[in-house]
Length: 443
Image (tube, rainbow, N blue to C red):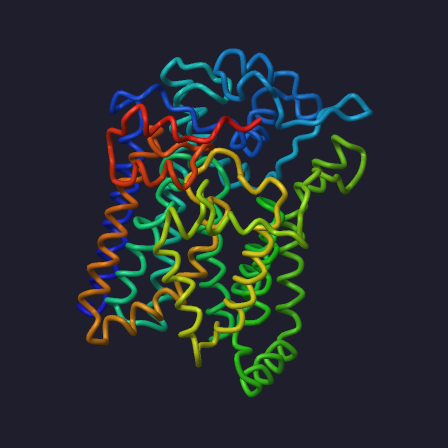
């Protein structure tokens, strides 16, 4: 037991900080009453009140009255699109609502017991939904810990877990703006790594079903997460010998492949049924636009919210990609990272709305935990261990400070640039002149 105490302590500390952060930015600490089911998060969540309370999934005429009471979308219901048949279709997929459903039920019961409005948006629902990513996050960290301990020391695992969340924007999207997809998908990726590892070590129908079901659930939450498939597909193909052994294992367990496909389809089936009911077609184009031949590198290095600029510890995660030699997940992690990063920087709306750093990369952190741990393991065993620890500690402190700045709009959610960032760096009380450096509001 002594050999794994540090990593378990890291999970406990990380979870406590996540919970504390959620409480810190709530009415318990003088903030306005919490509303997590707003803006894009409303689009993912609206399936639940539409079906279970208002009984209107086709037209969703209840959205405007609800918005007038709770101000969830700035008076513009952009989450739905008018259809020729008179219905309105949501542009968002239903997977997150499926994950939120048990917590929605708890919120509904509490609302009834306390006399709050049972409309899906009163405080009991907000708190229930806000706590759900924390619950899933704990599960994700525990699963990720098991995966990391399979390949790395307890110390490297502990340090990876702490930095992966507390030194990055993951803390914002698991604790504060947490009704969006990223915190939930963080856990789905950790679970996928665990299920994939288990199947390759000891094939079973259960682990095969988990692999397929998790890919389907991730895809029906955010369709670009279908790239999760490459983690399972390319696992243990890092050499010619291991690749031959892997495909021989797949051929010997064809039934497992069928099970994975069935579970993936079943996970996606609710979305198909929704489209058929509302639009009359089994498939509906939600209207995303991509610039694959002209990607937006500013997502990574821009002054607005560049990933490497605002969460610089991610540079160490990427550096770890060069230290994966001999690992069964080397090829799967590398291919996934390259495809996923290209997909994210190629999205036409590269700003990704109001956000801290590049929020679209948060769900990939469990995958990047593997190369990150490889780098930290080597650093801890070298003469540079203390300088590396000191540098990582500094970046962790900076990130926690910037989370506070972001939630107090010192780091603006939509108008930052290099000059403004330099002016407010580690400054809790910027001057009016500093604030004038912000870019004009985006149209």
